[in-house]
Image (cartoon, rainbow, N blue to C red):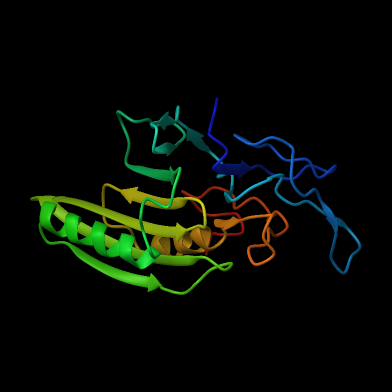
Length: 221
């Protein structure tokens, strides 16, 4: 599968420090010597600006869709797919910065459009600070398109130097506070780096976050 090199999903580290990766070659920086225990740390194998995330246990990646402007990748919990789902994770990677001057501008545009299209819309900005040298924003939102129906989502936008990245975790229900916090923790570990620019360093690969749907794993609270 061709992921156009804009998203790298790393799997659990093996004893040898190898990673499972999608959409990137083996160029860029390799592992380095790390840590107080003298263990070898593994770094993402990328050679340009890339969004990095750890593979989510028991989640399945659907066939990506690509246009001239961007690539969309959807992930679903095991047993669900695009025609039958209760929650999903969408990754949008634009091939340019899409004319955006800040991540905050993406929030303004999307929030305005969603407010017009979905009744009882509410949103809450959770983070609005640069991350790894990039303009970044994280927000929650929800709306009720019909009686007894709720859509809720958590979004993270990173405006890179070369591309625009948008993550959306979507539920067909209102999540509990615990689930919101779990996914905010997961989103904290998803970031953009560029090994060709010192101001956007790639960091050692984090442990696998475990099952993001249930308990367990480093990101679960």
